[in-house]
Length: 317
Image (cartoon, rainbow, N blue to C red):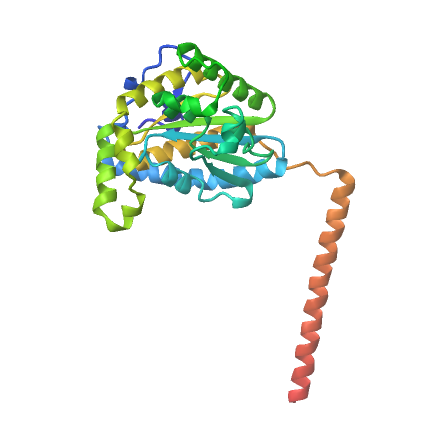
């Protein structure tokens, strides 16, 4: 059976100008010669272990207060971004993690450059920041609906290939800056097939408990599927770098996507290898003294309890 490490490597997009989205199967679910229930069980066990490992690694990351981790999720509607974040980050201390979901930009945000509102939300040292959609929307939805550029009021903006190349360059520069200054960037594209999206949309409509998830905009954007796939392919090809590579995750099976994402994050934090702060000798002496004091208190309390028991026994006699 293929190992988790090999699966992560399979999904990672190296800095390769020949990247094609069609080479990545959204329905991939492991070795077909192995029974599906075995593959699913293996993925679930791996996810459970990785959730536990990530919780421990996040404690070290927080304590070291040096590196931070920025995790970016991009996907078409119904690809499972929310549920992936929920399952993968279930063991992480909320104090060390922050999630941002970016919606339509406000008037204030449109009065700044296209990266401004995202840079404000970057994670502090020691923390994990999660972007549920990100500045990549500026080369995805804005590219598919190029009329949105007008709202940004960029002086003399000419929306052509050079315009998008400039945005890719700006994004690469930002991520290089983050990498140089202690923020590790992980980028996930949850690769959902059009037919699986149709099934998930139907489920939202058929199950009353999921009706609230439906939006008329879902079907409207689905009509632009091919345009989005082209935009994703070009964005990934242009911005998958050595310092911030993309990972194209097969997302037709949620148990597959969650397992791969969790393993990728664990490997990234382990590569950083955050350590608990070293204790200076004088501080260590103070710690040992405090430890002894508390233990002595416990012994004293125990003796007092024994005395009380003896007294009560004598009183009974």
